[in-house]
Image (cartoon, rainbow, N blue to C red):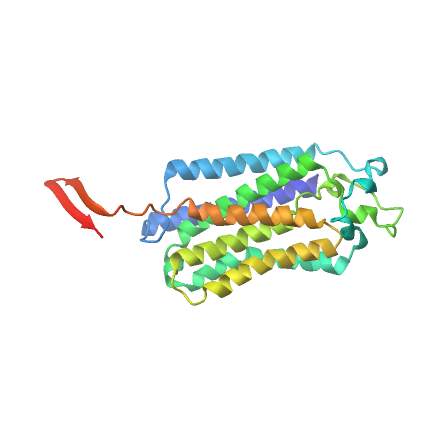
Length: 271
C-alpha cells in the first residue's frame, strides 16, 4: 500500500511540476506563435479530468482483492495469448523499465529546437495532461479487468511466491501505454512545429518502435499477454497523439473577412 501511495504521489508531483513550469513560462513570455493555444477553461477540463481519473484509478487499485490460486483459470487464456505463459525473464522485465524511462524522456528532446524550446511552457502543460489522462485510464481499466499476469501460470513459479493484487493487473500494459503516450506526443508535437523537417520519418519511426520494444519486453518478462500490449499501445498512442491535436489553433478561414477595431472596421482577404 505504501508503494502505491508513493507512486501516486510521485506521479502527481511530476504533473504539478510540469504544470507550474508551463504556467511560469507562459506568464513570462506569453503564448508564442506556435501551433498550440491554451485556454483556462479547456486546461482546467483536461487537467481536472486527468486528475480525477488518476485518483479514481488509484482508489480502484486499493480495492482490488489479492490474487489467489483458486482465481487461476488457464483455460481462459486464448490461443493468441498462450505464448506469454512461456516467458518470465527477469532481464527482459528490467529492460522494459529502462525502455519506459527512455520513452518518457523523449519529449525533453524538444528542448533542442528553437521553436519548441521557446514554447516549452505550453508543451510541458500538454505533456502533463497527456500522461495524467493516460495513467488514470490505464489504472481504471486494470482495476476493472482483473486479469492475472502470465507469469503466475509458469510451472516453475516458486511455491513460496506470495500473490497480491498487482498480480491481477495484466490488462492492459501500463508500461506500453505510458511509452506510447510519451513517444507519440513527442512525434506529434515535433511534426506540428517542424512540418517540413527531413527528420520527421525518423522521429515517427522512433515513436512507433519505442512502445513496441517496451511491449515486447513486457511479454518476454512474463508481465503481459500480447493483447495487453496491443491495447496499451492503442490507448497511449491515441492520447499522446490527440491531446496536442485538440490544442491546435483553428485555421483561419479563406476569403473575405470583416473585423471591427477601435477606430472602425478592418477588411481583409485570406487566400
